[in-house]
Amino acid sequence: MKKSINLNRLFQYIGMILILVSFGIVMNSCEQDELVPTKPIDSSCDTINVSFDLAVRPILEKNCTSCHNNSFSAAKINLEGYDNVNKTTVNDILTKSLTGSMKSYISDECEIAKIKAWVNQGSINN
Image (cartoon, rainbow, N blue to C red; front, top):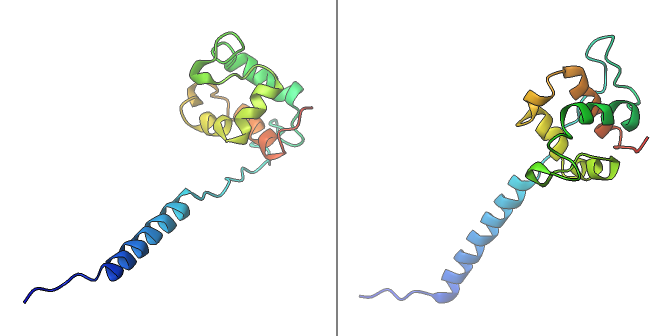
């Protein structure tokens, strides 16, 4: 005796599987922003009210803009000027790079903490 396949039932199962897979993808893609403490690493590292012009820009100019500038943007990342730097804070490229692939270029933990603090404080153009 041959069993007949109920197409409606089959489509219901496929639909449920697709819903579960979609739910899993959505739940996996949600990330919580990492909140980096803005307290000083030591007493000489001031991460309170970090200024872009006085703290962040000099760090980036010293360590990053030789490869990430208006003329040559390695990995299509330009860190010259506030507008370009701010674009990298929106999708978290800047802070992820500081602890990842670009960590060897900024080895001073205080400088990294200052940039992270500036991002956490809203990436203000000050």
